[in-house]
Image (cartoon, rainbow, N blue to C red):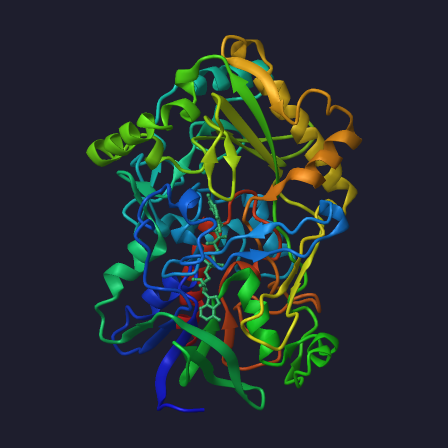
Length: 534
Ligand SMILES: Cc1cc2nc3c(=O)[nH]c(=O)nc-3n(C[C@H](O)[C@H](O)[C@H](O)COP(=O)(O)OP(=O)(O)OC[C@H]3O[C@@H](n4cnc5c(N)ncnc54)[C@H](O)[C@@H]3O)c2cc1C
């Protein structure tokens, strides 16, 4: 191993939603030295725009561009698994929809053995992250580092969709992050005056000048270094040069739900069978590494619309795109300022449920070619739906001892019968809303899949053949006490010293919604736990 060995109190691997927050918080204490290493670049020219969601989703300059293994459950398709690869991690390329989740999610975590992670424990952490634009809103934060706004875009389509949802028996909810998640509402977004609020912007930028924080980009961790049961540092590679850094106190892995289990396995920490199959010596047997993987499979329906002006397919094409760009530059508004969906709904597929079990994204356009993010040629709209808390469990494991080889990602989507029923029901609910009378004057025919897809079997087959994910991988280093877990409630890797994990891989179950806010919460809470132990 060449190069000088550097020493820090803490080494954080991965500058994403959790890692950047953690490094920024730890370095608030000037007596503490922190190294943050990030495999990606410092930024991307598009990253501050909300629309970078579309522009970077297939761009290797800022994205790992993983793919799932072809599986029977998804018609043997390799499904794209985008992950941010730059300062800010996935928060710098995501769809900006801001969702805390339901109190039930975190109370479930606590019941599953993650003591200290109940809703009562995590709600104040969400409060301290947020600077919510509606000052004084009950149960919301203000003055925190990350501004959350309500989508300002106006469109007769949105009014009609609200009315249609009410007609279909649902309600309008002005704050799904407040007391009750249920209902349809305008999206809350990590956007401030048209600018993306990534953790790189909100947390790292104010911290980066600190002399006790060193941020190294284009530096990929290769291995966690162990001395017996104690983690002493990491081996990493920067621009082809091997390097080593030692941690006086702790190493914290925040490489995300795909890369963190990969890094553990490459370090000999994981299921012995998997490690041996790839010629890796077992340093610490921990079979739960890479298991308990979940994501949201996302089913979309596209409708033609009768009035061209209500669809961005018309308003953001050709000269329209130039007009939208000018509007964005002048006012920070319009197409280029939108999160991935301007309206969201959290609904119950069955009235007897205590809380919503599906989420819908309502989008005033449709995409023709997802790889090139090309808009559909005709005026149209999309509604997408996923089951909030899927039961089916997949896995993420190395497929080679080569650290540059992408891991094997197996979703195992729709394996569980509850997941199948919920997705089929959610699919019908999308139709029920859009086919309500209030939409008669705007709705055209259902373009995709089309009304011939009707029975449960047809719907599920269509979902298996066509759906993508909602980009919310979690759970591969689950937190708890059971053998199925990797870290304890203080995020310490079971059986090892001075090694923690803080990212979406530790979620015991899927939070009910998009996963950026919960990942940031994990980064904040990790900082509390580490500071309390110092
Ligand atoms: C396209 C897309 C759209 C999304 N839309 C939304 C949305 O609208 N709302 C929402 O709430 N959530 C959304 N998400 C999900 C959300 O952004 C993620 O759940 C969250 O950012 C995960 O945070 P994390 O800290 O676990 O990992 P990440 O933010 O992914 O950070 C991991 C970091 O580790 C780095 N890294 C990996 N391996 C190494 C290594 N070996 N060495 C050094 N660094 C390494 C990565 O480059 C990355 O920067 C979306 C995600 C994507 C990709």
